[in-house]
Length: 259
Image (cartoon, rainbow, N blue to C red; front, side):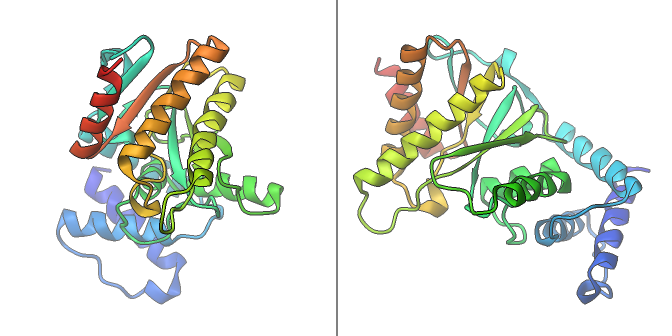
């Protein structure tokens, strides 16, 4: 199968799973097909899938990531000892673990083609990630608390693991509690990574964007918490601050170059 044949197969299978969409016509252009496939994956509830579907999905996603271009951590230059700043698509980064800014359901973003990092990570990891998260949440028996962390395999992403953490949602004025919960997200991810012998971790800009945490304040907390953790524990874990927007890159550059 070539990439288009895989894509059409996956769309057809997902349409057949959901009778409400079963009669939908598959678009002709690759761009529209990709958008439909991603949307169908986004709305799919956690559950088992056939071996053939998973095999073709995995082949498709890994080829899509290869075409986007994979960045190796070894190709990055640290801005400080053990600390990196990298602007790019976190789903293309090969390190031990990447951090996902999750919601309290911990099942990924169900909004078709949404631009959040939760959506991107679940899309390119594959439907196995939502199933793995659902299993964790069923065992836990309640929604994930803000500031804590969970770990799953990364499935089709270039990294090995995904750390899921729920950041605070800022409603109105930023509070001390908001700041404390965000710092807890970083500490929880670092502690869990250490426990799992993870050697490198990439943090996204947790709680910014959809959760309305001011970008500059979030970055200050991220950098301070990581540095405090490294100093207090003597950890040699490599930490990558991953940014996507130019604004965030400029904020982190000022913070990291100031020392």
